[in-house]
Image: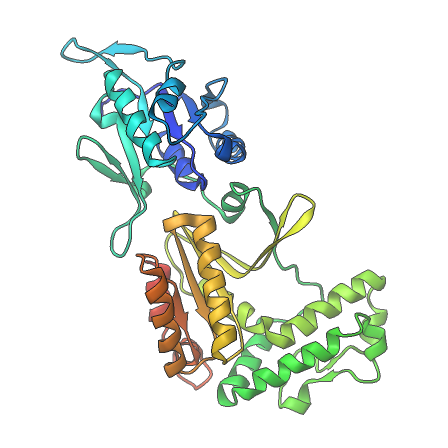
Length: 411
């Protein structure tokens, strides 16, 4: 690119504004024009809020935002550019060329094509026209410029990205799991894991305990029949749940219910999510990832139909993991396709998705073949089964081998 900075960046807002967000944070212009349609009006407003938060007062926005009445109509697209300031500045050869910058990653194909034509008509420079290449295997995300040059996103000084930003771009907020003392600890998750790896049906028995415990929605009713860890050969930090002593130590009914819910959820399967989150933290990846276990998402005041067991944001990519202790193909396949769709919706081609389950090698191969056949994309969802979990763990007295997990988190 030229040595002088562009004063105005034009972004074509798409249904997923994450590429717009990353491009603007990398380029950091003094002013941004958000070209939008009726269908992307809400996405445009969310993008503006997140860019304002990320870029601060150093960047302003063209007002009003350029509007395209019909994203499939060439003349409508060209009209949206008529009101923009196609200011010019002299280059080193004395020629007058626009210092405008265009990023045409988002929007429809018609919008991208005619935005590029308008840019050329305004004497835009090829090194100022770009799109976000979201990368793939062995190819990191980068901005590609029309003069043939490119630059990896990691090479820009500051492109902030975290889970709350990715979700906010879709109008979603979330709450992560909040432990309530006395809460399950990492040793509890490891204890259950090791017992399950030696006796996989135990996971089903523990899930049945969860269903039994959650039925009355009142922990006091279950004091005569608490969960007893020793019945399953387990040694947990709390062996009997709940007891009168534990309930009396909690302040009120709602707090008791919340505390009790975390325990029966943990016993019934959330232990594998907690354990997996710890494994990812122990990989010591660089740059250090954000790891969130138990994402419960909300849109407005109502809970959205969105839950993610483990979410990881590393550099410019997001990784969404669905965990299940089930071993049957119908349920595993349902969770597999669900996490694939959700990850693509939230992060586009920058996202990665995986299922972590207790299925055997044959089942894992069948599930992987199913998702590969349907998806056929560079960010194909991965399936990890009981053999992978066994190699990642310390349960058999060996040093854990987390190579397959690390490779996926670096893809």
